[in-house]
Image (cartoon, rainbow over all chains, first blue to last red; front, top):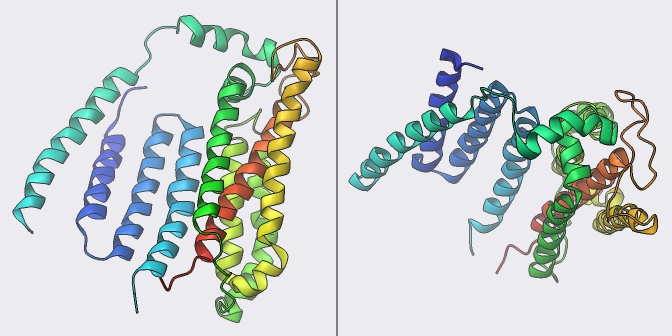
Length: 80
Length: 237
């Protein structure tokens, strides 16, 4: 499979989302950008015909990790 | 933006692009694979009867490694439960608005079809027990978020999830010992007498669909109970 222009665009989006997850202010913003990062990585895996890995990445990265991170941060942020 | 961040970006972006370019040039397969990969591609359907080669590698040739992966999840569930033990489940969550509750109440009856399809077609199409199990765990999380832990914990109790996880782990081990009882290796598939069936049918692949089902239940219950443990953690230290 020869790499094509859309695949490079997806890779650029992956790097942009990774930088955004690190650099943006606010925990919730970072978590949402991290789940968008997982979706873009899923698209990249689908381009590379690794559908098994893409499915696992989508479900874990965008679904499970987002829920666990949001719950953990909402439980630890405010201390009385 | 602080200089520290700029230096980090200046390091990270070229590294990421370089790694991506390297992986792309190395990932292109130009000739027929040799060694174990070639053997698996040529003989997997004849050996196991499952047309998905990835699943055959995961649950037939390398089933013992898959048992190790499942043990990792079991160990992490046990560790998180031990860390958060003693905290009372939070009973004040009321869930989202009645509009969302009603619509999700109807839609959740449809949502479980996708994970179950992924699990049961693991030997035919991409996916398998792990992917379907995580989807099912996300469905458990959805029910808890939408309906609130007060109502959800009456039906999807943590003890139910723990019991399902332990039972499916035990089922995986028992399916593996059938191979030993027949005089072959642990987790043997066709050699242990499991019928491989006609490749491409839903009932084919010998023990692989059963192992997929066990892993699916185990992953769903394990990851769901991890979320419930975090949800019920004491947030007033």
